[in-house]
Length: 214
Figure 1 (cartoon, rainbow, N blue to C red):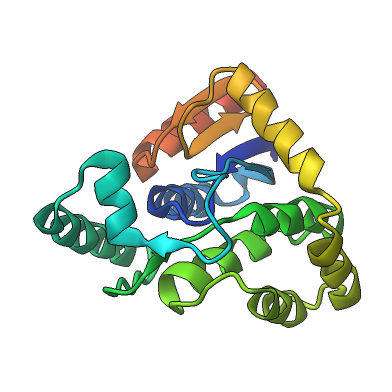
Figure 2: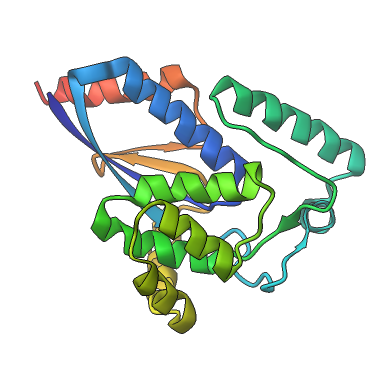
């Protein structure tokens, strides 16, 4: 069995990030027992200056990218269909907000020590896209509790912003290395894929890496 380390740079309000990761998961499943995978999640805030109350998602996209209402409707339909292809449920709604994700990334850094980073990342994607929830402290702590992580530790992190500077440091590090958009997938510190690639593309890259090890 070949060892494979994958670094994922993403944000939990990025639909392409969860689609890309879900496709990666399918690729890993298809490769079965050929590989032993270690996944590390890294922060990338799409909107680091976003207020804690957030902003209407359609208004935000119109202001940032010039997205029209018609364009938004089409994009949401396309993303919902792509999500179904990888067993992820997008539940877009008119009042949906773009949210600040700084506290989410602090919790993800903390969860690395427990080996539950991926579980937490998926729970946060589902909280936002599937369950129509916001990243309030109450909601975040509920996710932590469900995953059987230390709720008191998580509460302390959220109240003190314990990992805030570390989140910013890591984000700056990736930007200095040329990562300007997410998702980004880095395989064994040597091969990078940008965007939500197809399952077959992930399989091809992984195959080439494990063959190099033979």
